[in-house]
Length: 289
Image (cartoon, rainbow, N blue to C red; front, side, top):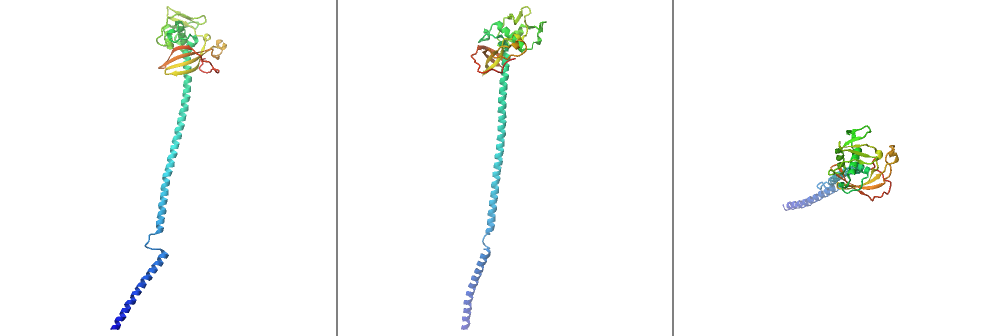
């Protein structure tokens, strides 16, 4: 019996080392497998790397999209600004051209307006009341002959016109203002004479440009509100003009300063003064022909 117990103890003791040895062997095999194929319990590194690369690629794509949008918006802004610049330039050039054309047009308007006054070569004045009635009547009749439609007036056999005195007064007020008055009378000289008929209250006049003394040439204009200061050159007619074969192409003999008020499209001659203007070069433009 004692021998049996001893044998059993020996078997138990030998079984324990065998179990430990089996565990060590199993661990060794697992280690070898892990080294060869990787630990199955560890995270998949390759999968993580792939996911990381995918996220970086997505970020790169998402980063390119805002940049592309920025360039597109920037290009649109540049194009819009370029179009605005072109439009502004065109408007600027058009405005400059319009101003130049308007200035020329205004010069021509003033030249036509003062033409009857220049023809008469009236003496300088500061107020219209200073003008003699004879000069006002002569200017008024020349205004009718040069700037009005004379077809409404009766004509005689010698092509002379019969102009009612109220037309002469209205014409005078066109030039010198609505407050001027006239003492109607015969005016003029042997070459150009406007005869007043007291019975019919009319003037007899004959339009003949061969007797024009001067023609206006606008040299310069300055504006102060509704008042314009105009330097006017007095151009004499050439021999060709007197003979009726040509226009007026001489240089001014003298220069006068006209003050013109423009209100609501109507011009009024306020004063005529001597001018100290001295021409530097040959004058051109603003001349009536």
